[in-house]
Image (tube, rainbow, N blue to C red; front, side):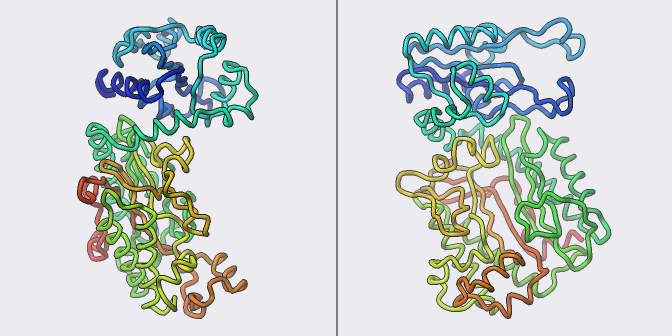
Length: 460
């Protein structure tokens, strides 16, 4: 948790942006695994963490832009809870630690919000993503569940995106800490990528590292020999010599800031010639993106330039043909690179994704592209200093997609399917770094996980 001044200043800034009305900020509660007292690992809501900083269940924040008052609703711990869970600070002391001097019992939020409703005060909230929060706000606001999303505050979303997109130095330090843990995770995975090892063994080891050095993993680990499946969470296979393993994994700092790296490793220590050729195209795409990142550039334009690098490399190998720029304009590259170049990162690995990607990753000038592949780009907007973003190009050979494009003659003028079919069973390669946008360019955050093929092979 940061100093009370940090949270006070964030709330002051938000009140100034809002101008009037109240902002409701519900914290998360415990989520039962199979009965009420046996719960999943608690994760506080990121908006609540950003504005109120308190990492525990049973809290609700209210920001009054009309009067400048902030209220923390919550209940002091009972004796029974002390017996089972130990002592905790009083609510008034928790509130004071984040610069709030007004507290009230949790249930009194109903009467307080009721007063604002009677006065006709504008009530702002972020549309909820958890079922229990939906039910709570339904009762609090007197709406049907279907109305909650429609009545969420776009004004509040835009102001929070504006604030959270530009990272403070203390936030960057937290992300760097998560990146250092991510480095340890990926190096451990590289050392373990030997024939006969179960994917699950590696996944369990690196998740243990994330817990040992911080708050655990920042998202469910992707670790698989079947890298052609972009988000493959199945770890049930034994590693086979000659194949490659994609490890897409990140850590959370104790303050819940994320890292997100991906590396692709040859099982048994050596890339085949075919694997190295594809790997080097992806590496060139990754390095090109880093070199292009700077304030004023749009990430959409960088994504498309990276697509040209991939298309050109595949053309040199005989897998694609025709004019490179025309192929990219027609989306032909998406047969091999069917996702976006990256996304915002911070308190969430896909930062602020619950606010709506159209508000987080795009702006009035740069809108989402509907074309297959580029439609999955989460970040297209103009870059600013102190944005933290991911850079994760990849090349994949997805049998079902190849069959569809071949049978339906999609982009056939740019694809050499006879050559492509020789890569069925290849899998996929993705290489991902986390970048800080600086005043003049970009800086890779944390110690860069080994990425040159010779470095990667040396771990075996």
